[in-house]
Image 1 (cartoon, each protein chain N blue to C red):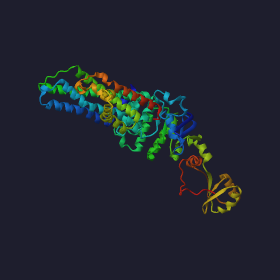
Image 2: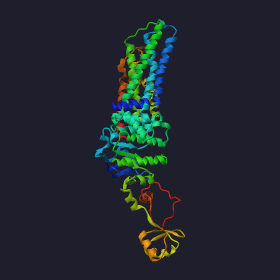
Image 3: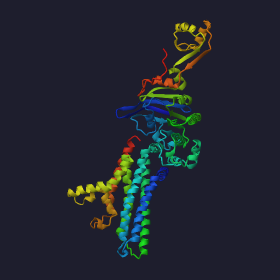
Image 4: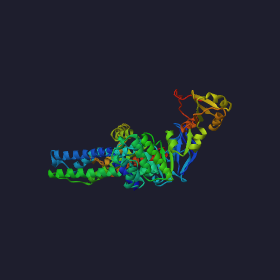
Length: 249
Length: 309
């Protein structure tokens, strides 16, 4: 508990955490409120549309929270405070695990709260405009998937930070991975005539957790689509901890 | 008690610390000296399990550092005052460290008071001077009131008042029976503060002894003599094997012969003496003498005083 408290204090006592979290919260809320208030024909707006709007706008939030997680470890290396941390707790595995747990809990809790607030705000505005919203099992699954995706992106950033130890390089890779690298890989796999290339791309596969079925040609994979990204994250963190155990701090 | 046993650390082909062994006794301030690149900081990092040694061990009261469950209560270390997040306040910096070992807010307030940073506790560390960061670093060392204190260049960036304060703190800690190991380039400070010395060069132990013994053994000793007819003493002194350096018309510095002998010679030859003062070189002189062959980077200063012939 002492280590978790220490890591929580570290996370919440630097400005970048607040700045990125506020952006991560305000951006989707703003989108949802504006669209719900300004959409032309509310009768055509379904519960699924509201959930899709929330999940798609909050993917950016999940990435920003991943950046918070990345900086929580790379800032320690950049400022040399990792040496203070390891000197105060020589069991490095415990320190790194506590840091990961705190970053994960923060990311998932923030995502869940923002998502629920956005959902409540969007529902209220649309209901006041006489829209009739109904939700099905997919919309519920997408909301859970969003929280899981946020957790995995948080750990992806943490794992990259553990291995690379440099803020700029780790954040760049975290952002380019989903936005560029997997898209390039998808093109390559498609050209190579690989069947359903998305299955081989961890982030794009995980996005199926939050995408509506029509985004993926009617295929709804459910939460199991997140498994490749979860495996990747586990491998990265395992490698990162092993490297940090052996390397000089 | 700190025991270093055959500590070895390599970086590629470079041997930074080579089979280093020494002990640091409780109740004394031990100065850890060596030229730049001699391996002092690497040794300290290996002691705290921050760098992984290739061989050997560092033991604190018989235990390796990594086996100590709550190290802040046993070993307080400050390796670099720059190890802070500039955006964090001084109090929050201490909270991050203290909470990892279950140390509460009361003790944080106490150490802030001890180092004189209470008034700036809510200020961001990024705006601190190096001297203030050193004080903050010492506050983190004192959080658990440890019985062993390790400091790497703690006087860096401190003003004269700060240096004196740091010296008083370390001497006070040693007087309480704590083990204090401190490295510093300020040899004049070390001479005032340290009881014992561990001197290393090129990663190897050069010498370990008390400061007094070290200076007596390695620093130049001479006698300053002032007399209106100092020339009358020249021949008798040369016959005694003395080396004489002329300072001015009435003053000479004599090596190789003690003050008592010079006084007796002066009396025997009827020479009036205005000054007969035994002199001893400083810790710095002794340090430079001993490490002459261990310096990685050396310069020959055009401002150096002439050597005695």
